[in-house]
Image 1 (cartoon, rainbow, N blue to C red):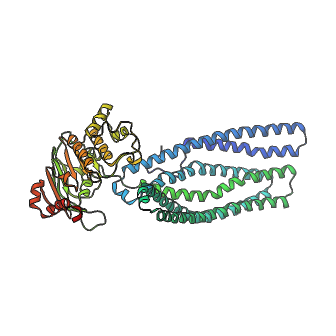
Image 2: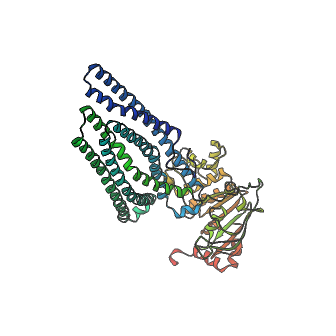
Image 3: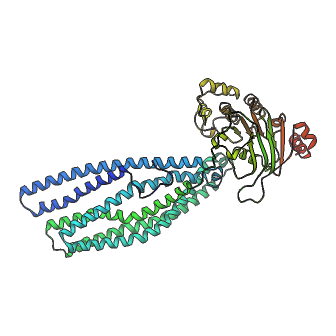
Length: 558
C-alpha cells in the first residue's frame, strides 16, 4: 500500500524484487547460450554437439518460463501500484478544502489522478526493473566477452561509453519538454471536461465553432511539445543503434576470431543492444516520471481541511453568529462585516438581499466550506472551529439551486452520504414527504447529473435525501429559484413536512418563498440592515420594500 509522503520512484516491493531476481536468473541462463553455441561450432564431435544442443534447449525453456513468471509478478505489482496511488490521490482530494477546487480545474485534477499516476507506475514497475536487469545483462556480457577477447571487448565498451554520453544531454532536454507536456495535457483534460459539462449551453448558443477552435489550439500546443519530445527520442534510438553497429563492424573487420568465437561475439553484441537502449532511454523516462511525481506530490502536500476533532453535544442547540467578519484570500474588502444572527430550532429564518450581499458566503461559513473568519459561529456555547469537521457538517442538510443528483437510481441518490441503515419503507416515506411518491420509483434511473429528472424532481429528491439524513439544520439555498409555481408549491409543502422541529435557513429572492418566514434578515453590502418578520420589514426598511415591490411590479413595467 502506498502511503502519503512515501512515494518514491526508486522504491521496490518484495514482489518486484522477486521478479527482478527471476529475470536475472533467466538472463544468466540466456547468457550461457552463446558459449554453448561456440562449442557446437568449434568442436566437431557429434556427442559434444548433441550435449551442447540439449543444454541450449534447456536454457531456452527455463529462461522463458522464468521470464514469464517475472513479467506476471511485475504486471501484478503495477496494477496494485496504480490502484493504490489513485486511491491515495482520491482520498487526498476528498480531504482538501473547498477553496482548492475553486483554484484548480476538475479536468486538471482528473489528468493528475489518471495520467500522471500511470506514468509513475510505468517507471516503478517497468522502466526501473528493466534498467536493473539490463545493467546486469550488460555487465555480465562484458565480463564474458573480456574472458573471450580483451581488445574486441574494449571496442564494445568504447561504443557503449559513446552511447551513454549522448543519452544524458538528450535526457536533460527531454525533462524540460516532459514537464511542459504534462501541464498541457492537464489543460486539454480540463477543457474537455468543461466542454462536456456545458454541452447544452454550447449547443443552445451555437458555440461549437469557438469551442472547437479553442480546443484545437490547445491540442496544437500539445502536439508541438510532443513533436519536440519525439524528435529527442527519434535521435536517441538510431544514434545508439549506429554506434552499436559501428562496434560490430570493427569486430568483423579487425577481429581475428574463430567462427565459434565470432558467433558468440555477435550474439552477445546483439543480445545487449536492447539492454543498452533501455539504459540509454532510462534518464528520459526518469525525467518524465519525475515531472508526473512532482504534480502528484504537489497535490499530496496541500494542507487538509482543519479538523480539531472535538465532539458535539448530543442535545440539539440553537445556532448563533456573533460579530462575523470575512474577506476572501487576496481581497482587501470584507464580504461580511460584523454580522450577528440567531437561527432557532423550530423556526424558519430567511436571508434576503441583493446579489453579492454575502448570503451564500454566510452559508459556506456556517457549513465550514470557507474558513479564516473573524468572530464566532456557535452551536449553543460551542465554537465551530473547535468541533470535529465531520460531526459539524452532520448538523446540516443543504438543498441548493445547483443540481446535486448523481448517476444511478433514485435509491442510490437517497442513500448517498448516509452511514446509518435505511430500509425500503424509510425511503418510500422520504419520497412521500418530498411529494415524489409514486411519481418516482426507487429504481428510476436519474441519469448523469440527474438529467433524466425535471428541475422540480431533482430539488424534491434532494429534500427526500435531507429527510433521511435528518440533520438538525436544513438549509435551502435558492432551492426554488428555477422552478415554476406548481413545482415551487410542491417543494414548499415538502419543506413544511420535513422541517418540523429543525433549524431552517432559507436563501431566496422569491417573495412566495420568504413571506412566511419567522424572521427575515435583510443583508446589503455584507451587513444586516434589519431582522424582523415580513410585514414589519416592509414598514421599517425602504430597501426591502423596494425589493418586494420590484417582484410584484408587472414584467412589462420593469
